[in-house]
Image (tube, rainbow, N blue to C red; front, side, top):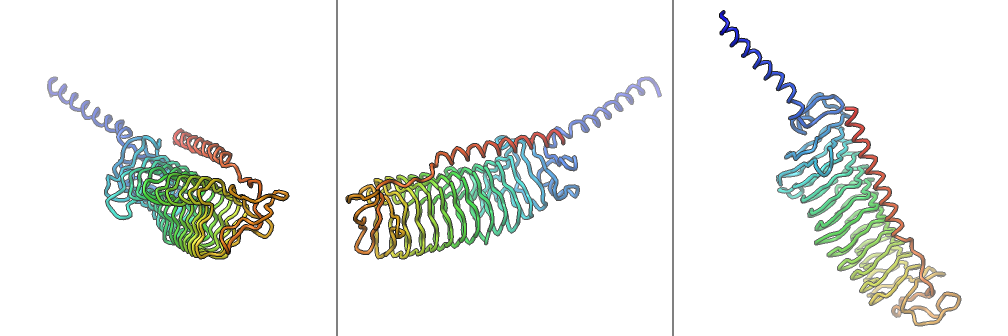
Length: 410
């Protein structure tokens, strides 16, 4: 071999080595999906989930970027995005973005968008599973933001769900789920809940563009507490064919129709709420045994409408400056508890020791025998909102810290 041939051989070898090392070093830069538990890297999220090395309890970390995938989560893992503003899962308007069919799955830190194309396409769909977590995500432009079908013990916390046909759809005997401190913004319908029991709807903010704020059908023993529902094109909250539900310390304002509509809804409790500037405060149709206690009805067109609904109890409420305080049709109800009635801003009688000397008459069969001179004290909602803001901030900081700590230890 002459010198020229040797030089050519050396050059070729160096080129090959350079190419090999280049591939080795480039691999982590192009593979942006990381199993933090197994320390393996992948090209797609689905590949990372399906890998035999990925086991229950593992953490899949997704770097910032846009990923066009329809993902099936079939293992009990945590799917963690780098940053919810910059880590984007896009369904490309073909179907559901993330389908969860396994217990103990956590999804956090993503923008999840463009789930359309099918009737029940969802940003995140959880079916017949338990103990899941959907925390701190943006869910945008989907047919349904989050769908829970037969799921139980799922925590849905601090998500922003915007521009969807329905923000949350819960069905199929979903139970014991916690829907907490989420923002439902500019969805046609905020929350749609049917055939579901014992769920907690707590501290959420709901605005809608075309329908109901929160709608419950054939759903019992649910708790709606400290939610802010504003600008509903239809009703703020609807309970139809529901019983034993509790609405407490909610603020419902500027609903075109009613703040709360109880339709064929027996034995529900509505207390310590603020109903202000709605078409109507509470509307009962064919509902019995409901307790409407210690609420503020302020500046609504109608405070309370009662139609074909008997044996309901109203007391310790404030009826202030509604155009009509009560509209009653074919109904007989109790407007005091035998010792305490309601405050009526248009009461024309005189008071004796802060109680009216004559009843406040609604019609021939309905009257408040103990109208109160002073307004009743309803818990200040601004205090509750401030507390929610602090709790949300603590949650966000904690999640952010855990994510950064996980990245450093990976």
